[in-house]
Length: 288
Image 1: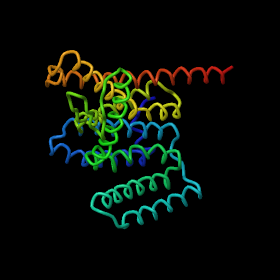
Image 2 (image 1 turned 180 degrees about the horizontal axis):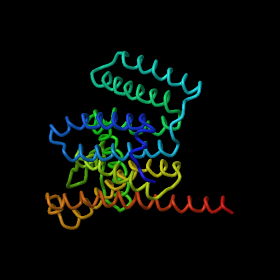
Image 3 (image 1 turned 90 degrees about the vertical axis):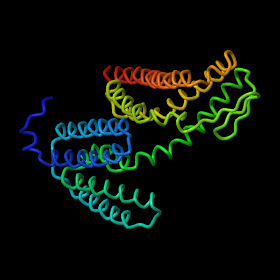
């Protein structure tokens, strides 16, 4: 389907939604660029562009229509809730986050009122990404880091015990008879999460036609990262048992870090392949 200039004239609100979110994403990326997080800013902007593009594609498919009375009432309700959320008390981070969510609700209520529920639903993901996730990128990463580290530590400890390795784990620490390993933020997979989200999102768009299967597959991002990180930790300790402290040197650490990304991606794609097979079987059953 082409994207002619006449679309902008026939559906100016679509261009308005896309332009508004594009500006929000750009200004949200500026603080990351100033702090030296060029890679995270680039990935986040690319992801924002893809989400906005999908939203505009939905806009072309469904076309703009006037919202009905229930949709207008829902839009006004969202707008009222956004005002309540914006003035609700909270600490510095939660309070600011309330404002970000309120701004997202205002945009979605605007879309719902003027373009209907189908377009509003398609605008939710790019709006939350641009208005909430990107401005609080570092905060969300820090919130995710500890659960990722804790889960990977527990899983890798279980695998190592099955392999006959004697150890004790406490929190994000692994205690071996001759070695203590701390799973830090850098080892949690959090630094690769942005890029992995982008790759995973593109993968689910290519592998599945049904939105439900796309969402289900996309939900396996975090488990894939945890399993990939756990395999890296297990491999590190097993190689340490064979070759000693050479494995703990920086070059080996970097190689195993890239291995973690490969492990996680292969696991994610394998899960997607399984889901795709089930999706194709169900589609064949319906066509019969």
